Image (cartoon, rainbow, N blue to C red; front, side, top):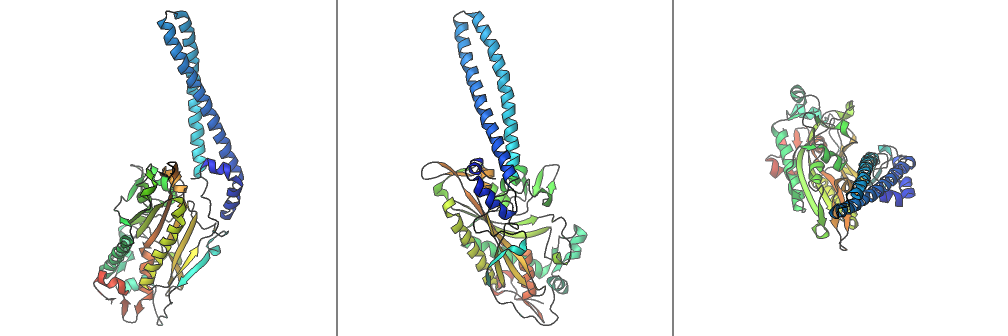
Length: 423
């Protein structure tokens, strides 16, 4: 969430930056500043009224003490009017604060200067590519056919139990899935991240804290009776561990990782491009989250990018990195890099990770602050990234490592799997 003071100070620059998102900001900024003026004026009036009421109360006490009851009763009538006035001002203040908050929730983050303008994924910029695309034998299969052939993932059984988008992993498929999770977590902890096991459901405050609400409620599974949400990523509970915290600069950086199942409704997702593991309602993911001081956050983002590059390099999967354009970047992000693995059997790129710097946008919602060297309170920067999301990584391994007599397992995973090949 943007700070009102920053909107006032950088209004024209913010309007220009938000054009990259194709977001028309002038009118809503004027509404924000007008509401904030109302809030500040009302607060000043309320403070004056309460001060006058308190002053009169002291005078009334002295008058009663001195036996001047008639004067005291006249002043009591005046304090009664002041109390009624303060009640009305308090209600007006509450209303203006709520309206201002709701309005601020509708404004996306300001994109970083390096974010290209654009309207869709077609305008994203490729910034890096690595790995050789293997040449598969004639008759090579997409992963959903391989899963059926080797009986390692059962999509129909998942559909029977729950519905489409909830696959059942079996035998070596389940063991490969577990191996990936363990390896990803070990690589993260080796890099200095502290592992957490977090709840799979969060409350409404947590959803607002990281920006899933009110923007993405249609994509989240809602447990209505308890007003809880199934998490779309471990980012939500991990980042919210620090909600309402006042930290010290020496506490930074904070590095967290966690494995969780993730739940996304993916409403309106149909067609061949979402077959098999390409898009699921439930999937596994290892997340990395960082809290940083503002001056260090972009160096930290580069560090996260390098961490994920190394994972894909060790898996020997061909991949590329995209800098997302303004029209494709998420609502809360200032800068996002997407990692895509090439699916040889499908002849297309599959997104396997997004790494983002949110700058102060989430921290302002979370009220996550720290005391800097001058002992002043300042908002932290938050970052997160998938390291990695499993479905499309698994799809990439199955398709790119397939041979005529089975599917080879990447060398780095063999100690975790306990087998070298699926056949």
